[in-house]
Length: 127
Image (cartoon, rainbow, N blue to C red; front, side):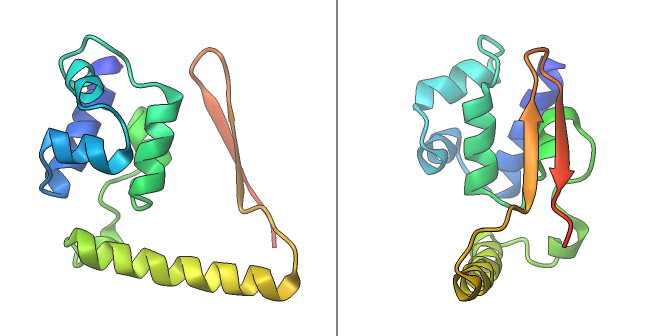
């Protein structure tokens, strides 16, 4: 399982055309951490996985953790430039913030529960 997630991390790095150092800087981890992870010395922590998903919202959490789903998402294949993808997600983020501000309340979108055995469950909010 550890090798599979490492390969998916390599896929993300290659998809964006990043060096390992640049990837580490962008997600906010030490460069040596990425090196140890890619060489199989360390396993990715929950914090690491969350930093990847927060930095690159188009990376599917399920795909990154267990290979279910796809990356890149089919709807984003024509926007393979990281700059274009970033602009698309920033626009969506502004729309979500705007609608939340109008209601003056926060509404959950998804809840993810992580268990000690490495498994997790996800629950989507119903509208």
